[in-house]
Length: 92
Image (cartoon, rainbow, N blue to C red):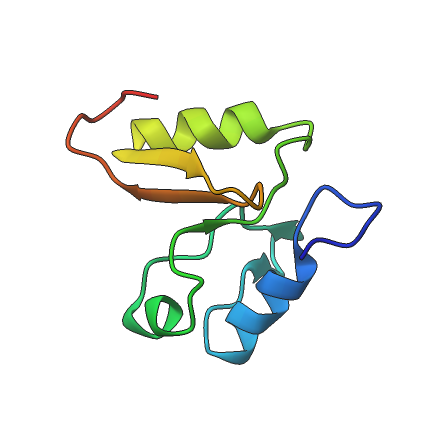
């Protein structure tokens, strides 16, 4: 679960890193918006997980970027956001 006063789920990001998907880009000093859908990430339950909260200032850019890349986003009851390959590219 995201830290109480943050708009980014660092716990999930560090878990993904522990299993080989580092969401932090040292060169740009930027955290990724989503955990990639690798076999390992799917197995640990993080594949496609949007790491930004719904209150993050740039969540709209993330959702638009996911749509442009051919993914649709959805929220679960616990308010976590996910993305999955969409059949309709560019649709939000």
